[in-house]
Length: 96
Image (cartoon, rainbow, N blue to C red; front, side, top):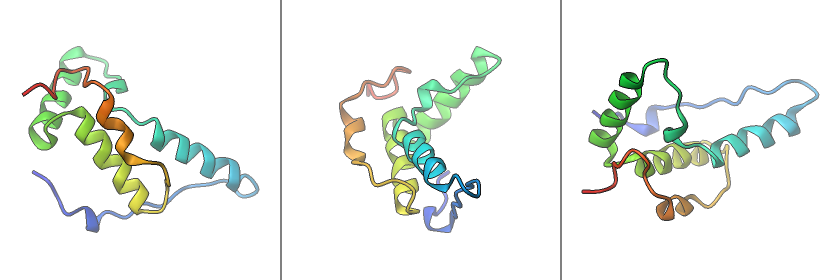
């Protein structure tokens, strides 16, 4: 199910004249990224997303870390990526 992360290209979209502010917002969004915060019109959709993430990554916290690392590797975040390990997985996906 996993693809090759090296094939993913990420390009920040920033406004001319507001680059610094936009880069700060992008970095902040990456730092605070949490798949548990996703919103779906139907609860069943969110439940299915959580199940797919659990199957592919073993839990939301692992998925969150993978996304943050991918963004960091793309040069979009310099944050410490290990802080996620202490946060609980609210979908119950880390309990094995």
